[in-house]
Amino acid sequence: MSKTKIAPSLLAADFGNLQRDIEMVNNSDADWHHIDVMDGVFVPNISYGMPVVKTIAEHATKPLDVHLMIVDPDRYIKTFAELGATHLTVHYEACTHLHRTIQAIKAEGMKAGVALNPHTNVNLLKNIIKDLDIALIMSVNPGFGGQSFIENTYEKIHNLKELIKESDASTLIEVDGGVNSKNAKALIKAGADILVAGSFIFKTEDPTKTIQELKKSTDRWSIFEL
Ligand SMILES: O=C(CO)[C@@H](O)[C@H](O)COP(=O)(O)O
Ligand SMILES: [Fe+2]
Image 1 (spheres, protein in one colour):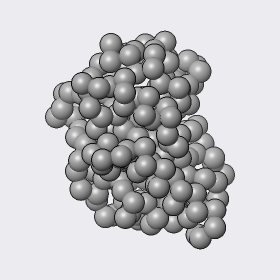
Image 2: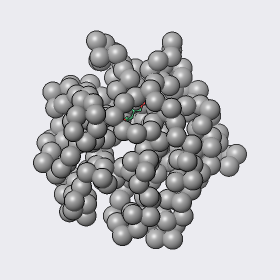
Image 3: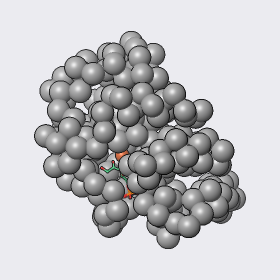
């Protein structure tokens, strides 16, 4: 099993000190910056738009994992590529022509991901899984940070892992929402490759240390203990 990646979600950062928090992630053991873009239509919240993503991209030194919670994401694929996104994830529930959307993301030189809401069955990815770099399982309803983890996520990850194996695909499984040091081990055991964590990291006194401890544990679990 390869090492689990940690992607702090900047949605939980202090926006009054955004540069400081981006630099904290740059200088930490984290692997990616996770950037949540919400439109107030697909989800009942608006996070931030292009000028903020541009600022994040200017200061970030690690891959930019952009999670689009917007309707009709095709309209903005090129823009996010120009802004510096390295990974672009769209929602299954927001795309009519998902295959075309994934092709368009790849054509812009980005890794392509599809996110599934908690109610969406992982088997719906069967006919596209080989084309996906990432499948993102939402472990809360998208739209807000700081929500409680939904327990049937483990089963969904397990089933998705089976689908990936059966299909001979190399898709990575990302989990997003309510992730912390208590559920991380079981998530990795179920098959998660990337853990997104917002509140658990940014709402602690020393986020750098929280990332360091999470990374140390996940390295140990993914390599030696599972
Ligand atoms: O996409 C989302 C929410 O819609 C996430 O990326 C959250 O930002 C994760 O925050 P926590 O649940 O870890 O606080
Ligand atoms: Fe997210």
